[in-house]
Image (cartoon, rainbow, N blue to C red):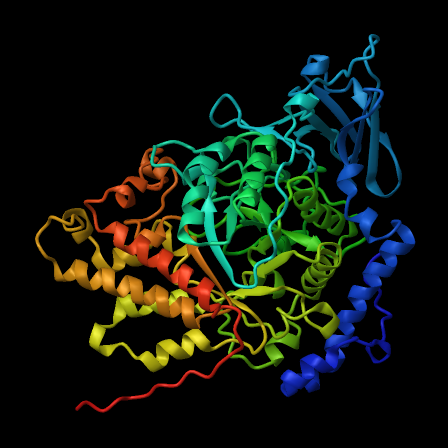
Length: 634
């Protein structure tokens, strides 16, 4: 089962292709390739229907895979491990006897195990029991692993040890009961990008409950109507900012329990906020003991084998999105320690592998169904779309770049399948692509020949602001160039505008406020301090940069937590290089709450922008032509 190579593009009809071609006639020469891609996508849906009972059943495989307590208190376990010679389950329930409970081998690399209840009828695996999968590889060695479908994993007691999988089956009285209905999907999307762990002023890892208490009221007060949560998918390395995912179905336990995350989302809905998840399906951590890497004892499985399965800049594993046959290759890998040098330690998925599609599509449905998220921001889409991952690519805008051999069709088809599934099943969903390449049709429906996203991030905008702040004097700023960058986007494909996000705040860079005012922020942000032209200029430009970005940059707007009031300095998570310090891994709300400091003026201006937009609705207004009018001086 997989992408049929017999698809004849000439026989494929894209229902609303003419709508796309009417808006952009330059796409006409590429109809054949567009139809080929659409045909491959349709083929997947046909295969899902023929072999898997339909896309709905296929994309909710979390109901079958992994570990599930049955009504009779038996436990049913189901895994895909094509390279394993044998699979076992062990844990504190059997005193860690590694070979006591072997799985039964099924077809197509599947494994199944049923653990009966205790004699008194109770479940042998209690709530919070620790468990491990044990894989016997092709060389006969026993390898400890975590289930790819684990829904709860926790930090080890000792530094340097692997994360631990736990049974999450709380009693009914401890399960979250949903209270609030979902808010209406906003047409004028204003996103507050957030990281739970840094949400307090204290030097520690904050919790889901902290976020509800400290941040949610601020988001509402500032006039945002959506929150985008980063680093929710479990990641063993905190300093990776959540982008080195180790357990895809597990919400990060360092912030609290799954029920507490549900409490957070319920509270956001009560406050009228849409909740978006920053989902990482572009790559996975290279961790072996507590990640997907070498899960079945081979280099393949979920990932491309060989060099194609590793990102040369992120040093990460890449998913295999297309290969259907199990690849049984054994190899030894040296797992490196992640760094903050821009080299993410992860692997790239094989998007052609049917079990990878099952895993990733079910992962999306899991967060929508179990946690009631309202949409996704897809990380690293540019890396997914191209075989060279966009590395060193200038993207001139010539359409051959988007319809040539450099495009990774497997990954593109996965994104089309995902977006069609999500928008068909959840009409109110929002999906956002982090893509810098400008792929035509990315934010048009799949039925038009597009990829199906609702928005793409306007990634050129923050780069332009940083360029001007670094390189040009104020008098050399070109408003024409700035406005061109803000308005240079594909017609009728919506863009999320932002002056800065988490990317600009990370260590090695600085926030816009710090670029503008730097060390003066330490001495002259008091309302009672001596006047400072640097501070006055910085506050004024900070306001104007954000206002013009908000007004001209797109059909949605994004702000990173704390930047609305000009949070100083940068973000740096605790790591060996900073002596495990939390000093820069927090939000200093005391600065904006202090009436004696000038941060309050930036915060109030930010709120006023959002209030004005809510009244005027420029984000969802029809596109307009922006021109420069020079008024003669009298």
